Length: 279
Image (cartoon, rainbow, N blue to C red):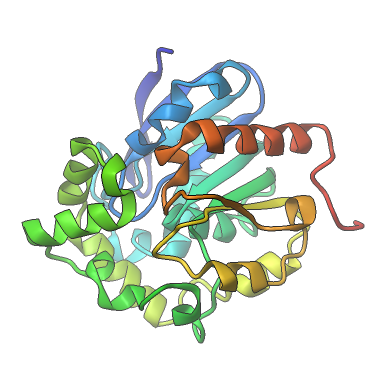
């Protein structure tokens, strides 16, 4: 399926956007740290685009988007959430579902209080943590690794890609890591250590918006037992989902397994069946 690509000018920089599908409920796809919108290729070119308006974009400092004019403002979790909301406003989108992967899921959680039109949120590879328990959500501290380092060697990039994508990695994903503004990684984790962005455990516990939690059952980066233990205010199907044998980027690795779950969630949101708590 052909996609539409354009550049949207925002206060966080020029953002490269790719869309597929023209009718149906908009779905915003938010990628992870040092990735790009191309990671959603299977969704943009798959059957979901026949029913929904899929919108993917490169975060500031990533892919074909410009580096942020004000890194201190934009390269934080709240800054990225604000950039996402501003993009939706520029596109004329007043209601949508958000699917956020890894860092994108954290951005989606921060959007819960910023975007009144969010009808549902799906997160994958995203433990909802607070400043005081970040290590609990991950297998190893995210602060000590490549994800928060400004300058990366070729070996660093190779290891980063292997850890996330394994055998499913393609060259463009490596290029995306190399292209990412190193100030982004440095500032993102400095802000997190300083407690910017609030406690995401509180955010997901208090939100009435339907939240789907879908992870690869073999994710080597996220502590899935922790993810399952979080108190969610409105958890879709009343459980966290694990897709057997899949890793951190399950939607990329096996779209044939992931996309039907996403489509079921979208259908439940549209039909008013996704809410599991009394409002």
